[in-house]
Image (cartoon, rainbow, N blue to C red; front, side, top):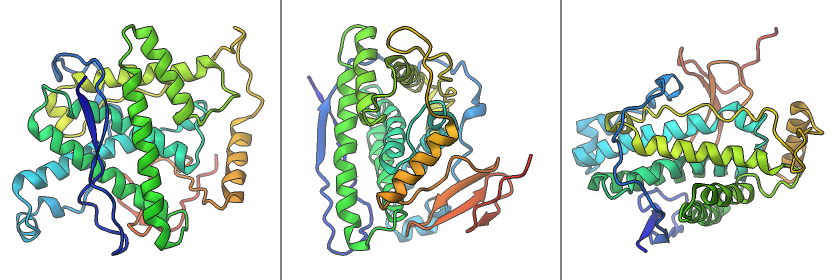
Length: 327
C-alpha cells in the first residue's frame, strides 16, 4: 500500500542557532479514499468559516517576496496555507469541544484537537486528484502548525534552550497520532472505521479519560468522519481561500452511559474548568484561557509566546484580558 508522508517542516526559522530539526518525512498508511475531490458544491452555509487570516501582508508584497527570493507561486502557497490553518484554528477553538465535549484545556489536548482538523485538510491536499501544488501547500500547512506550536510552547514559560526539544517531542506524538487516524480509515466498513477512530480519539485527544462513556467519544468520531468527507468534496475555490464551512461541534446532549442509561456527569462545567486550571498550574504549566472570552475577542501569541488579545471586528488589540460584560 502506498504511504502518505507527513512533512517535518524544512523552513521553520530556528529558535536557537544550534537547533537541528530533521526535515525527513515520516511515513504512514494510505487509507481508502474517494476517487475525486471538490466534486460537489457545499450544502452548508459559510457562516461558520473563519474570516480570511489577517496576515502581515508580507507574502503578498511583490517587492518583499522578490527580496526574500520567493516566487509568485511560493508566496501564493504561503497565503493559502495561512488561510487553511486559520480555519483549522478557528474551528478547534469552538467552546463546545471544551465544555460539553469534555476535551481538556491543557497544551497537549488542545494541540491534538487542532492537529485533528489540520489532518482533515491534509487528507484533501495529498489526494491523488489534487494538483501538484496541493502537495506543496500541505508542507506549508505543517510549517504554519510548527510555527504556531513554537509560540504556544514558549507561552508555557519554558527556558528558551529547551524549546527545541519540546518541539521535537510535540512533533513526535503529533505524527504518531495522525498515522493512527490514517490507520482507522483503512478498515472496510464504516462501523469499523468509526469504532477504530473512536479508540484513537479516546487515546490521543481525550487522553484515555476513563470517565467518558463510549457514546461520548463516538460522537466526536462521527463528527470527524463527516467533516473529513465535507472537506474532501468542498468546491475548489472555497477550499483554496480557506473558506471551510465546518459544522458545529456535536452537542453531546443525552449521552448514553455504557450500560444504556443517560450519562450523568459528576462535575459541572465550572468545576471541570477549575480542576483543570489547578492541575495545569500545579504541574508547572500555564493555563491560557482562550475559550471563555467576551464575544468578538480572540487570544493570540507573539513569536516569543507572549499573550495578547484582539477584536475580530474592531481590530483593537490589548495585552490585558478583556473583562466580560456583566449580565
